[in-house]
Amino acid sequence: MDSLLTAAARALAAGDTLGALNRVALRDDPPALAMRGIAMARLGELPRARDLLRRAARGFGRHEAVSQARCVVAEAEVMLALRDLGGATRPLADAADTLDTHGDRANALQARLVAARRLLLLGRLDAAATTLAPLDPAGLPASLQAVAALVSAEIALRSLDTAAARTALDRAEAAARQAGVAALVAEVAAARAVLDRPAARRVGAGRDQPLGLDDVAALTASGALVLDACRHLLRAGDVQLRLARRPVLFALARALAEAWPGDAERGALIAGAFRTRHPDETHRARLRVEMGRLRALAAPLARIDATPRGFALVPHDARPVAVLVPPIAGESASLQALLADGAAWSTSALALALDASQRTVQRALAELEAAGQVRSIGRARAQRWLAPPLAGFTTILLLPTTLPPG
Image (cartoon, one colour):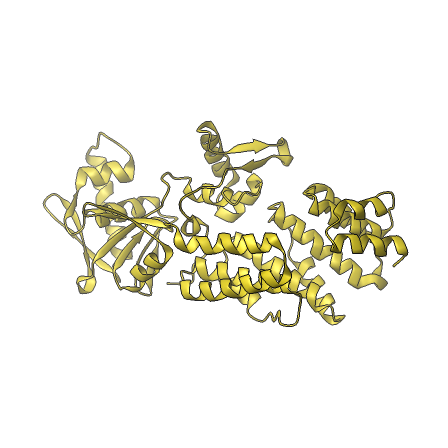
C-alpha cells in the first residue's frame, strides 16, 4: 500500500472521512476505489458507494483474492443498508470462505454477520440463528462482538425469548462501550427499549390491556389458547395453527376467540369474514363450509360447536382464550413495522420481506401515502419508501417471521 492509501486508511480509522476522500478522490486503481467506496458509504452516499466497491472488486485480479473478497463484503453491507435483499447470496458466502482460508477472521465474521442480518430482515429466524451459531467473535474487534450480540438479541426478541435477549444485550452493551462507537451504544439502547414498550394489546371480555414482550411470552407459555392477530396464529403451548394465508379462516377464528366464552352470531361472522352487510343464503352456505374447514384445522386445539345463534369456540382441557391484537390497527401493520426502521425500502424488497406480490405492496403503499403515513423518494427503479418511527410501542411482533413447524 502506498503512502497516500496508508494515510487515507488512517484517516478513515480516525473518523476523518473527508480527509480520506481528499487523498484518493482522483485515483481509479482498485485499492483507491475501495477506499472511496467505504468513505462514500460512511457519508451516506450508498448507491455511489455500491458502484465504487463493485468497480474495485472487478479491478482486483485472482492473485488479490483477499482484497476482492473484502470488497464483496463491503458491498454486501451497503446493499443491506439500501435494503436491496434480492441479490444472490453465494458471492458473500464464497468471500467469507476465502477470508477464512487466508486468516482474515474479522472480515469473515463481518461477512457472516451481514448474511445473518439479511436473513433477519426477511424473517427467517431459524436460518439466521443457524448462520450465527458457529461464529466466535472472541478475540476480534469489540465492534464486531457488539454487532454479533445485537443480532443474537434480535433473534431472541423475535422468538419471544426475553431472558436470552437481555443476556445478549448485556454483552452487546459491554462490547459497544469498549469499542467506543456511539452509534453502536445507541443501537443497543434502542434494542433494550423494545423490552419496556407495549408490543400488543390483549382484548376481549371487556378488556383492552397493553402487554410488553415479557407479558406476551408469559401468556404464550401459560398454556392458554391464544389468537395472535399480530402473527396470524392460533396457538396453545407448542401447537400452532398458521392462518396468515387463510384470511377468511383467520377472521372467523378471531371472531370466535373474541366472543369466548360465549358464541359468535352468524350474521356477525358473515359480515366480518365475507365483508358484506346484506347476507343471503349463499353467504350462510359458505359460512358452513368455511366453518367446517376451520373446525378440521383447529381440531388439535379446540372444538367449534354450533349454537342456536351461531358458533362457539371450546378449547380442549378447559383452557382460557386470549386475543392479542397489534398496537397499530389496519391491514398494513406489518408493512408499517418494516418501514419504521428508518431505512429507505424499495417495493421489491418490501415484497420479498413480506412474502407478498409487488402489486399488493404497491396498493398498500398508495393507501398509506394517501393517509400521510409514508412518503416516497426517487422515481421508477430508484424509488424508495420511508416512514417516521412509530413511537410509544414496539413493532417486533409485526415484523415478518418464518416460524418453525408447529
